[in-house]
Length: 269
Image 1 (tube, helix red, strand yellow):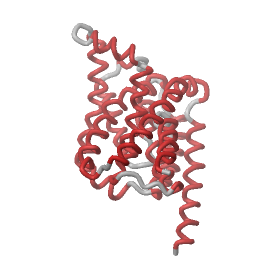
Image 2: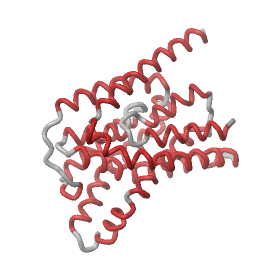
Image 3: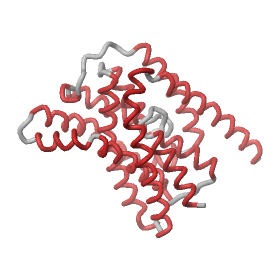
């Protein structure tokens, strides 16, 4: 059943990675529901996230290519690159230092359930209180704003918080227009998840088997193709409906998870 579980997990990852609902949180809850035990160190859950991130590269390939080509001569293209790199810096440093603690202490379904609920109410509050935007393109984003968004992203090291949710909500509080906030979250995911994937593979490579590699590959591919659908539709959706539907979804899933965990715990006693 490993391959079927890998398909399910890949679908969950691809459909949730770019929504402010926490893909890592959903994967950890699915681990509990399916009884899925992938490769040690949650390497499966981390690596398939990079499969979803590659969907951003595919959808925005033309824009990313133009930025790369223009970077030597165009200040706006260089500003785009520097904004993404500055926002990536805090998570790189904190992730490196706290990697062991995060995996050992925070990667559990109880933390996910509480984080989903708290994050849902935070989104509802920010939707009402966010100031009027003054940044309407990434190329015009100040380096200070980019760095603060990067600090907000670090909250997502707590499973259930949501990387995209933390960066988008942080961006809204920093007066970034919502479409730009969503796209910046997409682009920031590329170096963030590439680094997380490389580091996790490095730390766990010696314990992986050929079967683990196949399971990861299946989840990776499924996550990529399912994420393509979300990347193409998410920006249009939030333009019409905002983030409140995701907030209520988070709260509902978090409450159900707490109830389920409590029931399961009472039966295991």
